Amino acid sequence: MEEKQTSSNGFGITALVVGIVALLLGWTGIPGVILAVVALVFGILALVKKQNKGMGITGVVLGSLALIAGLFVTTVGIALIGGAAKVAGDISSEQKVIDATKKDFASGEAATFDTLEAKVTTYTPNWVATDGYSTPKEGYEFVFVSLNLKNKGSETLSVNPFDFKINDSGVVTDHEIATTATPFNAVELKSGAAIDGDLVFQVKKGASGLKLEYKHFNAKVFKDVSYTLGL
Image 1: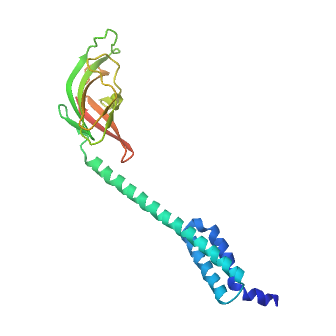
Image 2 (image 1 turned 120 degrees about the vertical axis):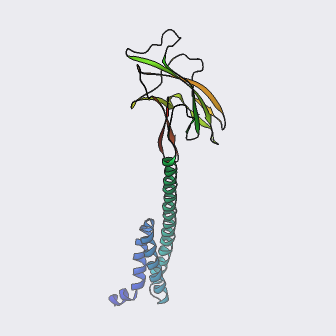
Image 3 (image 1 turned 90 degrees about the vertical axis):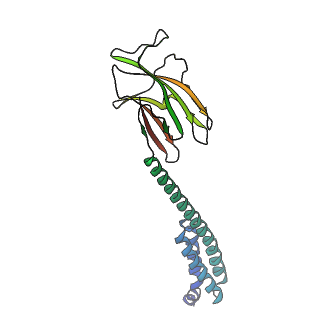
């Protein structure tokens, strides 16, 4: 008699067990949805076949909750994957634009570093400081560079003198602290705004083929992009 009772409650027992498993696995997305549907089907069959009503209803409830959880997780997962794919596509497109953009400029040329336009207005090799204490180390000399910088973009641009370095045959160094007429200070440039600023670098005596290097962090591709301007 007991074996017959168990057999007659087969749909209800299956709905209950699968419903519990489906609820536990609801966070897995598609697998949870599949198990939830199975629990619902067996729960409904248990009620239609008039088997154990309690098990059937419990299976339907658990299956419904698991289905909601599974569909939610699946929807969020698809949205995240789609968003990540879009971001990756945007980064790839922006990288192609950067790769195709001119990044090396000749001496005397007006250079465009992303949205920053840079022009060398004065270049003086073997420059001598007038502050009375700034002197280059032995075998080296100062070079003086005066720049006009303009923000050609539509958004405010942060400009820092440490973004500019001197490139002497692959040896890249920062500017020196020296007194000049218009020292280059860190500023925020609004769209269309321009400034003049001086930079002093220390290089080997008689160095030629020097380049002014500008490194800009591109937030669209999450990496630095380097530009050079011949002196």
